[in-house]
Length: 305
Length: 281
Image (tube, rainbow over all chains, first blue to last red; front, side, top):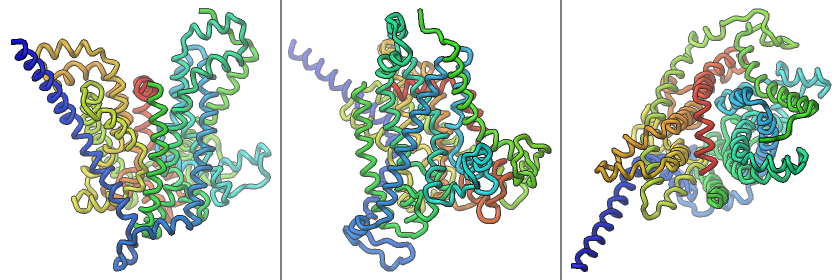
């Protein structure tokens, strides 16, 4: 009798597990199929193409060449240049956006409640489409009629109009300013969420103990914000590694290769040089780099939860 | 609660910083709008007019008069974005529920895998995807674009909705389960109504993603009549129209308006969604 009841219990448990595995598959399958077809399958295919000699302009020479693309990459100066550009662009953009977003979040948090609606206004740059931002700032940075040149000259910042998008370092600076304008609201949003999570008691206690404003920030606010700062910066590092539309519209990666980041380099290899094999090789390396950064990001996320 | 009061100098500093930020944030948007209503001759004025002396809507009227019609791009963007929102919500709600509530092996691996796909650069998969779409006859179709947009918006949507479903007390479901409801019934009749803010926020994000996406339609659509707004803009303002700033800014206003309006309408949900979904995991 006992044995059979144990058996029934076991079957029941098995059924429950089986049915939940079945439910999981049924519920997850549609999403996974879509992502598999559009993302996973092409990524694997790109990795395969990276071992081929594959130039659209020379259809007869398509052939397997093992590591030739990768060997070329190691000594391709433009590839290393694009990597350097990506690192410069990303680190400056993330650092500036983070600092401005932090200041903005702290300032708005100090405002009386009825003014918190300002947050909505301050968030708008974040939702404006990249292509629009690209064109808008291209117009504002224009050498002849751009408002940036005009204002800078009026306030004595520059003596004569600068060709922002046509000179190496200036183009990079213009691109970074544009992205910072676009992204600062994101940091503000994340840091505001972090500020709201700080218990009132903590602030109150520090006040009662006579801390000044800086001490309160240094010993109460900042420790609470640390994690959210790390998480949002990591997320934005990954995003900036992949950012495309703004640079594409403003400079197209130019002048020459001055603002060509890794993704722009891949695009230009594929659609200006039509060298699909090599573009895929650079793309594959880039995906591997991103997987490493993402793994780091996910581990940080997990530590928290 | 007793807290610090702002002294007068502190208040002055706060207000000053705020004003600087407001100008920095709003000036480019103002500039876009104001250029779009300036007569073409005044667009090239130096010093530039801060307030237009003779506002005009000519640039808006011209958008539909040339051989390239912005209204067609607009319609295509609307169709593709709404399609993406609907498909993404259905798929993401199902997947998020499974990841949040159903215990199964590899659950962790699946969640991490979904999160990782979010990080993949879109550029890398353009060529293989183009070849695949060519074989499946999905080039120049709404279905093809909606599928592509959906796949890239899914990871974030799933994670955000999972955050919302996690916060629904499981007891609510248990009683329904005992009453003999199936999982799908529980999800649609009990869980879904409780996570409407999350669904709205996710929908808006999916909409923004699809509306703003440049690379997919640039590659997967070659027919001008099927293009969405971002590649449409590139088509419209290339070559001789490169310095048609008035027309360009008018188009920019048209492209931005729907997303800004959608955003303002659901801003409250959005902030809640982000803080719950992204911040709390």
